[in-house]
Image (cartoon, rainbow, N blue to C red; front, side):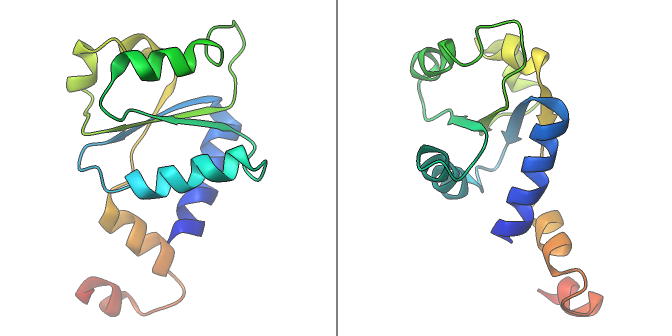
Length: 125
């Protein structure tokens, strides 16, 4: 599932530049943390940042990355946020400038399992 999700995310970043990932249920925190480690090691070609409780901390981390006029390949993970709740945060400007990304866990399971297991097995899982 991780490989499927990273491939999808990488394609979206390649197409759009700035991707703001709304993860209302917070299912993907550990996955995002692993992506950050991959980026730091040079294995991931785009920046990845995440909200972890402090708007100020995230905004300072993004200051050098998202400050220019060109769209830098970037993912910003916002666990616990929806299209509505992000509007009342200091991150709304970045959200509006980028493209929204969402991936429900059941959708990810279905996509990752497609072609590997029968549809009835996916549904029962």
